[in-house]
Length: 360
Image 1 (cartoon, rainbow, N blue to C red):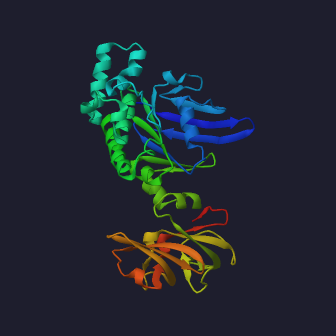
Image 2: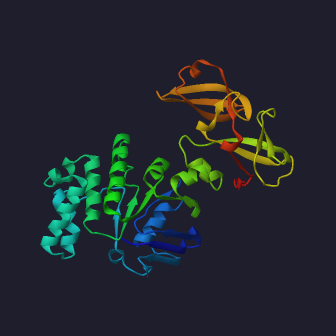
Image 3: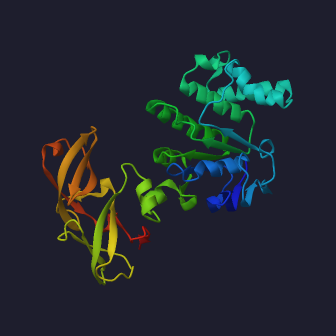
């Protein structure tokens, strides 16, 4: 196991800068997930840690050693890719042992490591099969097992579940989480799926356009996002954003009115000094809409579609042309209505300025 540090890490392709001075500390044994939209730089950052991409500036430190100029095979890492990359003509056992055999590892130790990995991943009965005889989930287990036998200091996962169907993705998330608890090894995992990030990570790193926007525990990012991008990216369904305008300030805080319905006014306990007429954005998570009359401000929305999922329903609605998603626990009749009355709670909303920064 090992700690990992990124210090002012930069990646350029010619004059184009892709990663803009990334700084990150990963503790020994921590499970860290890089998450962000396509093209944000998360896979590039992972490949620089692995040594598959040269860095243009800064330092990468693994286990107290700067590895900028160290070959990938000598960094003490093992990487699991999106594609399984298994040798089709080899059995599972041969695929697991191939890297060790090529490095001249003693036969007895190689067999011991392979048995250990097979036991952890529960693939003992598959050892004599070839990849074409395996399901997608089984192939991914073998790919992970090939990394385990190397006994690395750090595991790197590059969107390893994206080729699996929805049911298998859930199953493999559980297996990877269980694997981390069992091995206790430092793991860095890249995904664009924020559900994977929320369920797997000890710490999430949210990236956008080559910048680290926020780092923190999953629920800390959910409850206390630094900006509108993080607030909208973390959480499913995503946070609702409503245009608003500042209408006043007093000892209780900042009062705003919704642009779509100026009669909906809300006083938020914030210290931000903004003048009347300033444009802002109000953020409300779908589950934080309350029943009418039980919050700090009531409003009526037009219902478009209702999705009933049994234990909860998602109401797709509009307010003055702005789209909303409202979660209603066990609501089975809302879909029959043209409108729905709900309330907003000042303590369960977020406010952002015109640049998307959180106002506090």
